[in-house]
Amino acid sequence: MAGHGVRLVRKVSSTRAFAKVAPHVIPVFDRTVHRLTRGRVLPSALMLPGVILTARGARTGQPRRTPLACMPEEGGSWILVGSNFGRPGHPAWTANLLRHPDAEISWQGRDIVVRARLLEGPERESAWAAVLAFWPPYASYQARVERRIRLFRLEPDSRD
Image (cartoon, rainbow, N blue to C red; front, side, top):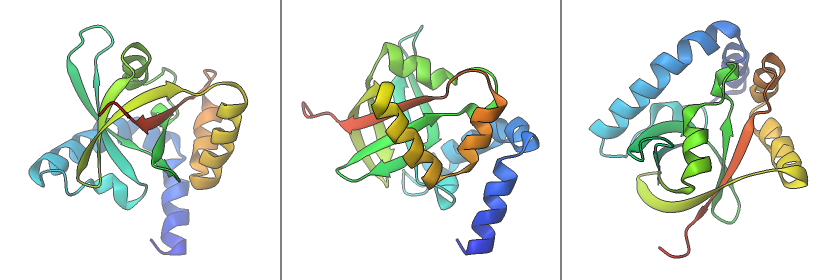
């Protein structure tokens, strides 16, 4: 995306109006296009890299598919940010990973078994700094909420 386009998207995605509309539109659109293209296209990944997370529901244990932005890391891991677009509550997928850390992601058309780990302490602080450098609007999301945004590191499961 060209420099002006990136700045515009960052500015728009930092607004409260975006936070009200996006959670209802972006995931549905992403899931539909991802399914119709058999995992080859994830529209929101045109702005940020993205995955489709499949994790078991915290209460039901049923598989839940959630399109999410991610920050790929060198070495083959991913950071997921539980920003919930700067809305008050933690997103449901974070509770699912806390309860059932074994999950799967669809990444660039490949299905990968992963294990999620909630980041805390200095490891979280380091990842948060990297996330803010990667996508600065996360700072405005954190500023709007009293909760601490959860960060997860997903690593390929070596048992796979």
